[in-house]
Amino acid sequence: MAMEKEKRLELGDFQTASAAASLSQKVVLHPVDTVKTRLQYLRLTSEVEFKDPAMHVMQFIRAEGIGGLYRGVATSLIGAIPVSMVYMPSYEITKRSLPDDMPPFFRHLTAGTVAGVCGSLVRTPVDLIKKRTQVGVYSSAWEALTLTVGNGGSIFALWGQAQASLLYDVPYNMVQFTILEQVKVVGRRLKGGRDLEGWENVAVGALTGMLTSVMTEPLDVVKTRLMTKMGFCHMVLCIRERPIVHLQEQAVRERPTSLYNILQQEFPK
Image (cartoon, helix red, strand yellow):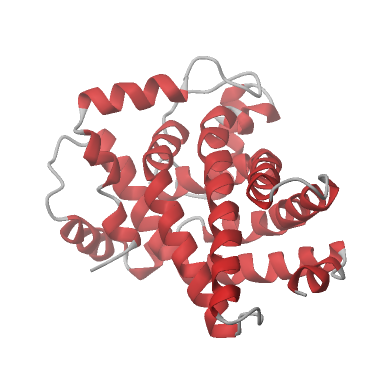
C-alpha cells in the first residue's frame, strides 16, 4: 500500500518536498553545522587539547556574536535548491528503474549510492565555499568563490576536493537510505501494516540520522579538513590530496576515537 502511494508521486513532487525540507533544515541547523565544522577544523590547525569543546564554542560566540554561527548560511541556502533538484529525484528514479525482483535491501543500497554520487557532484562547490567561510579562511562567500577560482586557474577549482566529498557523501547516503527504509518497514510491521504517522516519521528520520552520523563521522572529519586546506587543484578530481591517505594519517597521528569526538556537538548531552 505504501509503495503504491509512493509510486504515484511525480518527479516534481519529490523535488518540491526535498527543497522545502532542505531549506528548513539549513535555516534551523546551520549554527550546529558551523560549530561542528569549526571544531573539526581547529583540531587540525591547533595544538590545543580539546577537552572542553563547549568552552571553545563560547569563546567563538563572544568573539563574533551569534551572527558568527550563521557564517556561510547564504551559500548553504542558495546551494540547497540545485542539490534538491538532483538528490531525491535521483534516488527515486534509480529505485524505480531497478528490477522488481531485486531484494529491497540491495535496491535501497544501489539507489542510495547513485543519489550520493549525483548529490555530491552538485554539492561539492557549495560545501567548499561554505566550509571555508565558516572556519574563517575567507571573510565572505564571495571572497571564497573568487579567490578559489582565481588561485585555482578555472571554475573547476570548486570541484578540487570532489574525492573528499564523494568519500563522505556516497557512504553516508548508502547507509542513510538503507537504514531509513529498513526502519520504516519495521515500523509498519509493528503497526500491523498501517502507514506511519507524522510524529512517527519524524522519530524514524531522527533515528536514521543519528545512526548514519555515528557510522560516517570519521569521513566527515576528513572531508572538512581537506576542503579547508589552502591547496588548489586544476582538475575536477584532485590527485594531490588523497582522502584515504589523509584518513590513515589522521588515525596514526591522533587517537582513532578523536575522529568521533565532534559527535558530541551533533548529539549534545
